[in-house]
Length: 517
Image 1 (spheres, rainbow, N blue to C red):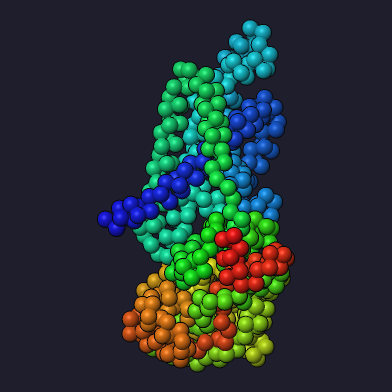
Image 2 (spheres, helix red, strand yellow; image 1 turned 30 degrees about the vertical axis):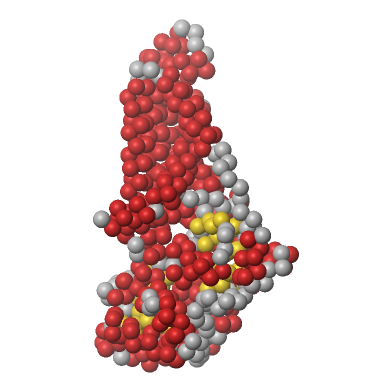
C-alpha cells in the first residue's frame, strides 16, 4: 500500500522518468540496429574480417558500464549523448553476431542456386541472405533491447535521466518504495520491448519487408522524442541522488535559499569532473575535498548558516567495544589529529596524485609514529569496517582499520563503497560491519531526525548537540560515537572560480538572486 501511495504522490516525476528511459533505449537500439546489421553483413561477405571485428565488439561488451560512462564524460560530456553512445556500444554485440551467424549459416545450396541465376554479391545479400536471416537478426535486436533497458538505469548517474533516478535515489535513502517505483516500470519496459520484437520476429519469416518498416518507424519515433520541449535554465546544478533527497540536502537548502534551478543527477564521483568540464555550473560537494583545489573551485558562503556541522568520528557498535575494548583506545589516538587542511591534503593525494586510500592512510599514520599494514577485503577478520562511496570515507575507513590492527593486533577487514548512508547504517546495526566513519550532521539530521524546534536548539549549542547525539545513539541503536577527528566536513555548494567571479557570486544567496533574475 505504501508503494501505491508513493506512486500516486510522484506520478508526474515517474512518468517523466519512463519517457526518458524509453527515449534512451529506443534511440540506442535504432542506431545499433542499422550499424550492427551493416557490420554483420559486411563481415559475412568479407569473412577474414570477422574474428577481429567480433573480438573488438566483445571487448566493448566486457567494459563495466559505469567505467565506460565515466570514460565518456571528458570526451562528450554528461547527459543524453554519452548515455546513448554507451548503450549503442553494449547493443552491438548481439546484433552483429546474430547478423553474421544468420547469414553464414544459410544452406550453401541456396546460395549457389542464387549465384547460378546470375546474382552478384549485393543482390545475393539483399534479396536472399538478409531476408532468410531476418528472424535471427531480429532475435539479436530483441536481446540487445532487453539488455539496454537494464543498463539504461545506470545512465541516471551521468544526468541522462530515466528510471535509474528512482532506483539509485531509493538505494541511497534505503527507500524500498522508491526503488520499486523505478525497478518495476523498468522490468515492464524490458518485457514490452521483448514482446514487441518477438512479434516482429514471428512475422519477419513470412514478410521480411517488415524489418525495413520497423527500422524506419524506430528512427521516426526517435526523431520525435528529441524535439526540444523547453528552455535550459540559466545555470544547471549537478547533485548526487542522496543530496537531492536528503532533508539536510537540496530539499532544505531550497526552502531556505529558494533556488529555481534545473538539476542533473550525477554519481558522486563524477560530479567534480562534470563541473570542471562545464557540463554543469555548480554542484554539492564536501568542504575538505582535494578536488576543490585541483579544479580551482570556489566554495560559496553559506551566509544563512543552513548546513549543520559535520564533524567526522568513528561510529561503533557497543557490542564490538565490549568484545574488543582496545578498539576505543586505538581510535582515540586519531581524535583531533586531522584538521580540515590535513584532510583536504589526504583527499588530494588520492584524487589527483592517484595514490590508493590504503597507501595514504599508511603514510599519515607514519607521521604519527605508527607502523601499519593494509586491510583484508573479506569476512574472516575479527573486525569489519565499512565506508561510503567517496574518497574521504575510503581514507578514513583505512585509517581506522590500520590503527586498530597496529595497536591491538586484531585482524581487520574492510567493506568499502556502500551506496548511501542508510545502507551502511543498517549494515552497522545488524552487525554486518562493526564501525565506519560518520559525520555528526548526518547522524543528527538523517538518522535521528529531531523536530525542527529541537534541532534549532541543539545547533545553537555544540556541547548539547554532541551530548544529545551520543545519548540518543546509545539508547536507540546501541551505537557509540568515539572521539571526533578534528575537521568539519560540511556540505558546500561550489562553482568554477572563474565563472563565480565573472557573475559576482560569492554566497548561496548571491546564487539564488542570480537564478531568480
